[in-house]
Structure formats: C-alpha cells, structure tokens
Image (cartoon, rainbow, N blue to C red; front, side, top):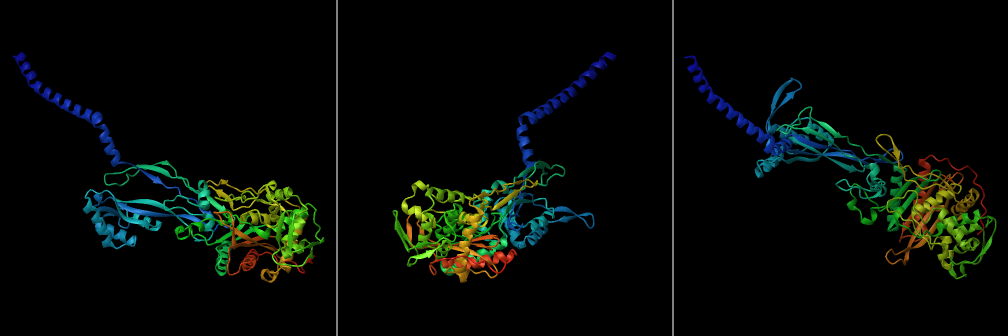
Length: 595
C-alpha cells in the first residue's frame, strides 16, 4: 500500500515540474532576447529618453579702453522652446503654503506670454499650429532672443516641458566709438574684423559640457547632473585708447570731412612719453553693432592700412637727420631760389619767390622744398634712407594691426635723382598715418622712439596677462637734434601762414603741414588735382606730451593743408585741457627765424 501511494505522488508532480521548466525556459529566452538580441535597441531608446548632454557656454571676453570703459562686451540672449507632445498640466509647490497646486497648460502659456511681452492668445495659437502640423511634435519656439532677466523669470516657473537655448550676442555699448579699431563679429559669433579677429585667441571663451538624465516628461532628474568640462571665460583686452578722446576726435574729424567735402579723414593722438595711441579717429567709420550699414571701405582702420605720400610733414624729420650729423647749424643761412633744376632733378616751391636767405627754421616756416633739398644734399642718400627706417618707416608699427601696411621706402640705390631729393620733403615714398604719428613721437621724445602701442595686454580669467606690447625705446637722433627740429616746428606755428589758426592759448605748440597728390590704387599713377593734406604737431613745446596728426583725403572746398587747421587746433586744445597739462611758462623764448 505504501509503495503504491508514492508512485501516484510522483506522477502528479511531474506536470508541475514540466510547467515550471517551461516557464523558466520562456523567461530565460526573454532574458537572452533583452540582454543580447534587443539590448542595443533598448539601450538606444533609454539613452534617447534619459541620457542628455548640454553646453556650458564660455563667454567672449570684453574690450576696454585704458580706463576700463567698455568698448565691446557679450550679453546673453535666450530662445525659449517647448516639447508640445509633452504639454500637460502639472503640480507646483507653493512656497507660501508649502502645498502643491495645479498649474494648467493655459496658465503656463499666459504667464510665459506676460514675461516675454507677447500676446497670450497669439502664443497659444502658435503652439496649436505646431501640434496641428504634427501631434507628436517634440520641438517648438515659445520666444526667441529674450533677455537674461526674462529667461530667469520663465525658468523660475518650473514648467517641465519648457526648455532654454542660450545665444551669447556681441554688443558695442559706445556704438561707433573706436569701431574702426575693435572690428566686429558676425551674427553667429565669428570674429570678422579688427581687434576682434586679431585677438580672437585672447577674447574667445571655451565652452564646457554637462550631462544629465531626464525623465519621460523631459525634466532633469535631480542629482543626475555631471559636469564633463568647465567653461572658460574669454580674456579682457585692454587698449591704450581713451574713449572720451576717441569720441571727441571722431566728432571733430566728421565735422571737418563734411565741411571740406573730403573723401575721408583721420585724427591720431599719441602720448609722447609712452608711445601709446590715445585716439585713432576716422570718418566715415563703422558702428560694429550694424557694420552692414557702412561701405566696405569704411569698415577698417585707414590709420594703419592706407599708405600715402606724407608730403612736407617729412621736413622736420629730414632736419633732425642733418642736425644729428652736425651738417647744419641752426644759425647758418643759405640762399634759396624758388626752383631746383640740377643733378637730374627738377622741382620748385609752392609759390614763386626771389632768391632769399633762410636758415633751417626759415626753410621749415616757409615749407621750402628747394631749401630742404639744398640742406639735405649734404647727407648721403644711404644715410637718409637708414634714418627713415630708424624712424619706423618701411615696416609695420609696433601695433601690427590686422591688415596693416608697411608703406614703401625703396633702397637708396634704387632712387633716381628726382626721388633722391623728393624723399627729403615727403614724396617718392609712402607711409601710413600710424607710421608718421609714431615718427613724430620719437621727434618729440628727445629722439627716442618707443614702439607705437594700441593693445596694452590681455588679462585671462586666472589673472594671467598676455599680449603685452614691446616698449623698448630706440634712440634715432640725439636729444639736441630732436630739440632743434622741434624749434623749427614752433617757428611754423609762430610765423607760418596758419599761425593764427593753430594757436592754443597758454601753450607753446609746433606744427608742420603737408600736401601730396593722391595715387590711384589701381594704376599706381597720380590723380591730377586730388590731394592728401596733413598737419602734424606737438605740444607743449617746453615739455612735449602729445602728438596730433590730422589728415584729409581730397578735400574740395579747401584744397590746401589749411583744411586741417581747425581740426588740429580743436583736438590739441581738447587733449591738453582734458589731461590737465600745465600751460607753458611765460615768456616764450625767442626763436631765430631767417626767411
């Protein structure tokens, strides 16, 4: 009996074991399918739903003037987007009651519209249109280009189906002030011109990245955010420019260009003691906030990129060479006719005159080409060529501005007889405004040339300073030679034909004018009847502090260098006053001028 019962129990257990075995086999098969066969698809789906990365933006650095005034900066703008397919009512914790309250889709859209200055019904209609086009739509815009404050307000609503995209924008708070120098960036943030492009390595921030997991409704899961790489903020580029002086000189040159009907004009101000550019104004120029509104030719910096024959502003430079070599005595006089026709060269003075006795101060006061060439003939062409290079001609200035031209001073052995003498009064060679202003800095600084500077340095986020300029001085001529050349410039300011127009009450000033024919860029030939006019000057002569150089291209209402006088006088007066430069001691010293 006992044996029979055991056999029946075993037979009843067999089906159960079979069922269990089948279940195990099914689950094992499904497990294999999930882990092996469908694993990639499942993981991809999970990653798409949960694993996300987002950009941590590094902000582009600022450009400031010498005093920290902002010339270029970056501001944050945001696009507010949504996933229409995920739109639903949700609960929000009320901080006042510490209870959850229901927030409807309609209430959410109305609040977003209020914060972003939109019409609530229009916003709701735009969302409905997205859903009508695609009921499963996962993307749509709620607002574009909103401010940081608007973004923060919408973000604080905590709406789970609303997202944000950051778009840094470049802004130039002072508009066209120094726009010719700063350059500008494109709508996509790409630097396109000027210092923005030249110093992009300094200014550009580096983006970082973070990862996070989100739930099915798109909300980041708390505690899942991991920073993969930190953003790096761009450096701050500090310029030597004074924004107030830049603004004032831009106003002055704009007025003078319009008054004289010139093609364009420049005003350059240099600190004599440091070689730093205080202003580099131009008109027409560019507002980097809207560069497309300016002609292509007006979007750069002609101060650095437009070489020209400087004309008679070269004469004090020539005088300094002769004084440095001891080839001219300031009291010595020579007989100067009104024309030169010898040694294979032919030229004359601007106005006919009888032969007259002149010393070097007189030659400069009368701006005599013949007198300058007569004195300069005592110095070899090779020596004069080397002096020109020592003054910084034929090479870019220390600024090394993007697209800067070096001008042309050909080797002395290539000079024909006409060029040999023409170079003494600023013809037969070319230089930029920046080069000539830099040369005058050396003349005013006791013959010591300090490289021209525009960028003072780039300060990185960690305090590291890079891109500092070279300030090593070079003695070009002796201090005595420079002083005697400056005396000739003061002679021009006191007794020259524009003396009453360049006077700055209370200060001893020195000037030199220049006129030259413009050259056709395409043909390389002179444009008859079209002139460049210049005025270079220094003040105060008892302790030179500033160089001011004014140029006008093809003025037509006033065709002589007199066209530059009002702008030069206004600029030098402003610079001396705004920088609290002490007036010159009285009485002024006598100057020996024979002319």
